[in-house]
Length: 390
Image (cartoon, rainbow, N blue to C red; front, side, top):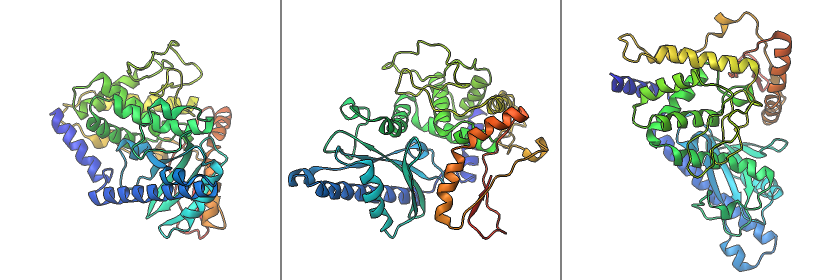
């Protein structure tokens, strides 16, 4: 019966379009390969501009490292690609935002390109052959960045500045999670389901004060480590049970024999401390507030109540994954309408506003006591100007 439940859940994921087709997979691989070639051409151009010796120009290189949902292998057909551009010692952030930007802008496959600079992790965002790409940059203190770069090798991690480290930490976290889970395929299936659940129930999105992709990945990996021999449906059931009754603010941390366990048993500055899997003292950046913490815990408990008996004859995954009923639950709503005169200006404007959502959340909590931000964003077909509504 449990195997039957697992198979029906996998089928539901396929039906919902969460598993990309082979054609879409090939398209993504082609895009990554093309981008790698552009990035290598870019560093050689910068090396030539810097008047490096010919032998250095010949051997120097750069690469791309994917992370996020694509890097973990849990992307859907609509997912974007998060890729880190890794350059050699002479390539600077200015070279990235000027020289590489111009090279990308001139390509026929690239559209809607813009730079996001005034953030913790500066990046370029663009569409390449129909796929949205987020591309931050890190500079390593080497001349040659190998294509199959082992990012856990300490040789490559020396003298990296704070901005570079923030960019790199996302790739490090992905690499470690994939290394530490006992069964990667099972973990990937589980994480796909958990992310779908979080989006349906309105508890997904770090900017909105909820759980981001990295938080859910570590929580899912933690359950996989605790229960390495159970099937997919049992893993989902154990996930809800584990975190419905977790004694927050006790941190969640993956078992890793190469790291010392945390000395501090509680991390009281955060509502839900989740330790990054490559560090003994760093935690996932979190915007969780009093309101969103309450909602996340409520949803964990609801998930537990619906999955604690998988063998019930009328059990149905659709009940667990039912969209959150905002209009039934609440009487008051706040609509944020953002518009711009040009489509390419809208991206920067929306990004700037989104980065300040948390400030608004705190203020609303002061006035209302409770606030439940709906992560959905949409467009009104009756309005001509480029816009987004939250």
